[in-house]
Image (cartoon, rainbow, N blue to C red; front, top):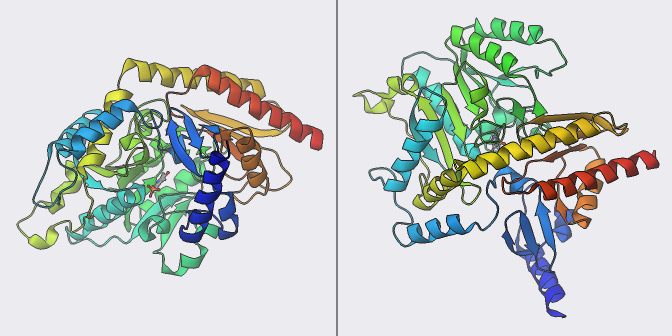
Length: 436
Ligand SMILES: *Cc1c(COP(=O)(O)O)cnc(C)c1O
């Protein structure tokens, strides 16, 4: 039985020699865990452990890992058409996926533009919005975003995101953006609405971009649909294009298919990725209304949207998305989503008054627990590393955002597995209380 540990050591050594990991200090590269596979909600490590993935592998996985139905559809497609240039050509998986998305997205979306990840889906949305005005001979230079926003790691996406420690090296290269205060549920929204109204009446605003209801990277911060509706009402009044970044919130995460479903005012552009393919392959979608496209409908070739990626609408990725939709729309999956929501709600109730809990909040299948520590709530709160290690030792993958522990599981998680995660969290809360 010497083989398994040897494999782990060997993979770690080779990884450290050749691979640079995302969002990982190089000094921590020895902590990387080699996997040999995964199934359902479990990651299989090279040394024989099974780790319960409670965060859907960075918010992407909807139906569990290595799903047989997804694998079968992908294998079929791989033997049919694996990839083709998408300028001048089309294929069934992309057409079918566009039709199906338009049928379930909030009313009014009329076209699907493909790219290949979440950051590109927001880059495309921003370029689409700027050129929408440019094609009409109107120059609008400014974008409004929410404080704490995260829209991806490429330059345009960074520009409309929170200016923080992650982006400090690039601040002077980012275009100017007007940030509105985050509409915390316990604060009055009036001053935020007033400042938006003031900015909006300058007629310099091309678009308003937002993560509807939940800001993921900011620490699963949640806000009310009513405030968002009021913001969208102001935007519409001033003809500002509304860009809903549903990269994280899409495909059931907030309890309905899309977070925008919770609002009566609908966006003009919607960005999708992450759960789009059930988490199996990279794919991005930017959906827009006919009104957004209108200035592009021209005999003038210069009004074309000159944007594309080599892997735009990759047939395998589109096939994964179609297969994921098949699974997502079954009553079995919808029931699971409701089970997770109800189970979360009970646990939330149970720990709400725990002295170690600063705040516990839920939206759909997302449950976030803000731990009380001596330092302020932030990604760099030092409790983060010890929490991550603590849970991993228990074969549980939770990846706290600073002092915010959150659950964002695949929909195939069972109520027993959820209860086990809750128990581990409660035990930790008790331990932290004793240490005080
Ligand atoms: C993850 C995320 C992105 C970026 O997606 P990538 O695929 O990681 O580039 C953009 N917006 C939101 C809301 C996200 O959560």
